Length: 111
Image 1 (tube, rainbow, N blue to C red):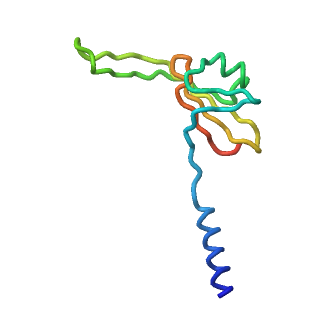
Image 2: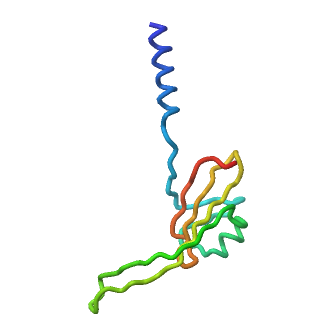
Image 3: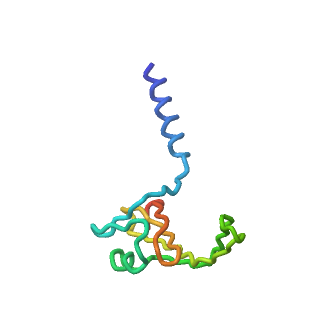
């Protein structure tokens, strides 16, 4: 009986180690006690959290077919920022569209 329990626990531990880590979308980010939320500006993020560790910028076309005159295509600037707060805290990825936070993701532990 004891061997079966030990074997089951070992299998559970091995199975747990096989689970990949995924980004989790959150609605807020805490930087030194200050809160970053969806719709905050890039300036607010930098003033509360400092400069991001990694940045990437690209343009994205958005197609809107809900206009009576036809389709409207809008181009937005998307900033992809990563904040690394060290090995004891999670990293965070922020997407900003036209200078405003639209998505906050919690990533794996920092380095």
